Image (cartoon, rainbow, N blue to C red; front, side, top):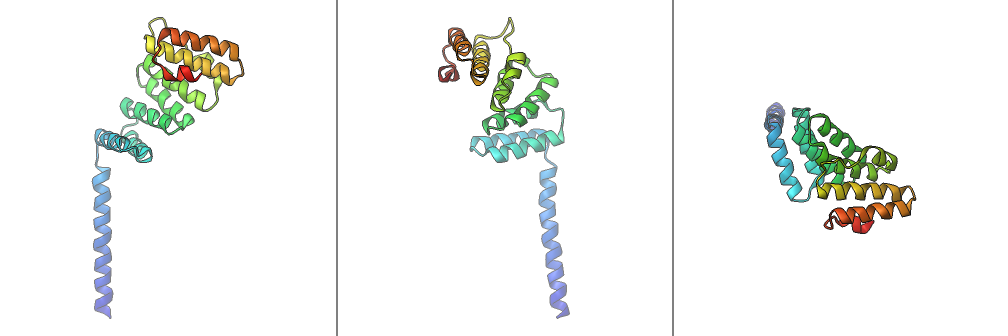
Length: 173
C-alpha cells in the first residue's frame, strides 16, 4: 500500500509540474506575442479570448499604445462601452492619433448613453479627414437623437452624408 501511495504522490507531482511549466511558457510570452495571439482569436470571431490576450499584453506593458487601442476597439465590438472608453482614452494619453481614435471614443460614449459628453468632447477639427468628419457628425447626430432632439440630429446626419456618403451608420440615423 505504501508503494501505491508513493507512486500516486510521484504521479501527482509530475502532473503538477507539467501543468505549471505550461503556464510558464505562456507567461514568458512577449507583449507582441500576446497581440498576435489576440489577432488570431479575433480572426476566428472569439472576442472573449481576444480580450484576454490583449489584457495580458497590457499587463506585460501598460504603456503599449497598440495593445490599448486594440483592446478598446475589441471592447467596442463586444458592446462594452465603458471599458472601450477607458482603453481608448489611455491610447490617446499614450500618444495615439487623436483624430483616428476620437470617433471610436464617441462610439463608446454613445454605447453608455453619455450623449452630452459626445457633444462636448467629440468635435471635428479643421484638418479632419472627410470620412472622420462624417463619422464625428454622425456620432453627434446620434447623441442629439439620444437626447430627443430629432430636428437637430437630422441636420447633422445630412451634413455627415454631405461629407462622405460611405458611412453606413449615418443612414441608420
